[in-house]
Image (cartoon, rainbow over all chains, first blue to last red; front, top):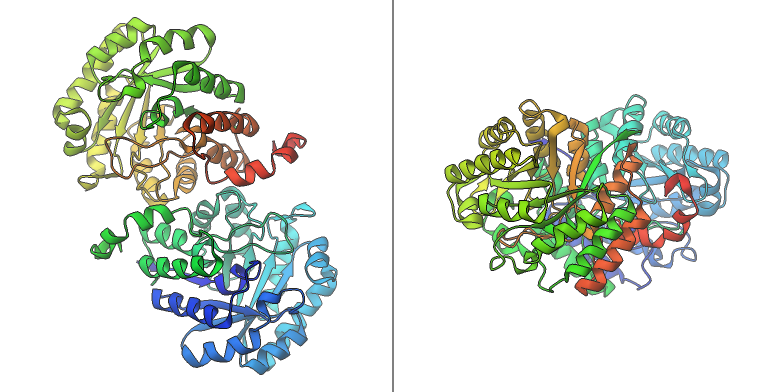
Length: 308
Length: 308
């Protein structure tokens, strides 16, 4: 079976938008359950302004604890600029992610800069991170549709992806930030982008707003994409992007990928444990589109290695 | 835009498994709303034993009323055997469907016959229907996985599909009766089956049990399939197939297909009206994976022709 690589973004993209405050201990427990499930790459937190995103105010405490408990875990943290990078580095972060939106308005709403300035900041942040010996990811956000500008220019997405690749980003993450894409768009755009960014460095970040997250993931797999962001239980949504409810659920992706002949290294029952914990913390039902079926057949799967 | 053809099976496959009795008037109103939404093919009812499926006991009254109210509507009815065909024909049915399961056990559980006998009955029923001048569909059920026998033999599915084609069935419907397929299986199987059955006569019937209904539909579209069964609101499930909860929702299919460049002739807002009516009748929330987003953006879509 061919391998695919999943970064679980529940601790960052998942939690950042939640109204209920989640303690540092609870975040560590969520990560512990993800690691137990076999997740080997986590987006741990974000070094953004604690005023803008209070849920991420404990980033500086979380990172060293994650590093100490799971030294082998790939743990990345989002940084909006050089100041965020400084804080991330001081905390011991080993990999950082920058977020560059593909439209003027989204950059202004998200980080209060225009696109040209945001691009420059991203490139400088990547360069500074590399100088510090850190690994890097670069998001190209609203890469399909922008909640403010509508359909995003593919030329612009391509240009920005190529710039992020040229700037040395280890992974370039094409993000359907508001979950507006359909499989045909994923196919069209990823087919073009894979000519500018090597598939080994190309990832896709999907949301499930319109119920097409799994279909979009399949479409990306068919184009050759092997790196995915997903969020256990589908926890997620972007506070600055109206309509961005729900990330692609990790369990939906793992189930579809496994049945389609790809190895993820992740246990579905382990994911259900992580989702159950997140539900208790957030005090609401979570779970992807496959959640009801996964729970109903859990006992059965426990005893059936082939489908577990 | 290329056309795809959707048969809404909510009145039959959707309702047959529901505990709450739905009146003939309510069924007519559901069909009326589907027709208003632009649906031009409906699986109206089933001429099975009223003892086995009480919800379908009014088949003989429903068909003439549907014919009278919507003479242009493509309306098909399920018949299990020659006796069912006789009743269907007496009611004025213009198109019938036979159901042939691809495994021995499923046929026994569903219609109390072995596969060989079921195949013979299906062929005889098709021949008799053609002699009466009726149009026909033939389902090959549990074409991916059987709840009793596990993975279904593709050779067997292929053989049965070819036999149904040879028997003159106007449409051969490959059914993932329990919603167990993943996109890779849909691709593999439909690619083989399209060599035995012309694409113009090949349909796929999907369930959404594991959250892969839309992904499977996309996979089928990519292989060239243009005929789909779906059920407004995702109403459905097979009473004799454990775990068959939820058909692919028509609205999920329409949304995905439209965004992917296919024309369906169906209005999403119209479908929401049909789903709202079904919810009131069945006294529980319905709706596909896109339901929350469709409802939230309904007002907006009403005024945006491009995305409506």
